[in-house]
Length: 84
Image (cartoon, rainbow, N blue to C red):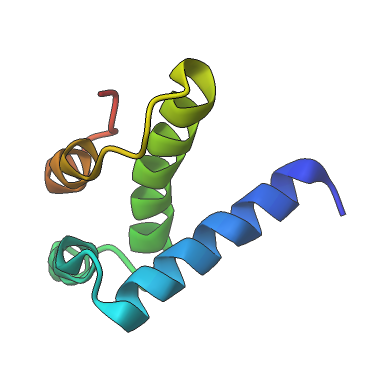
């Protein structure tokens, strides 16, 4: 299994856990909003995964802790790509 596929699976596992735990609740709100906008479940989860990827990249790049406010802000911007 390639590294990218392993990372992708881990990101989808994070999404699954966020939805199951409703933490943060904005993940479920975003999933529902994107579905209402016509995106299928897979597309919506991929977009949410981009927001998680932004957070992971920031953590690795700067060694700063996870920033929930930035994550939520990026979720709220979807379907525009998260760049912050």
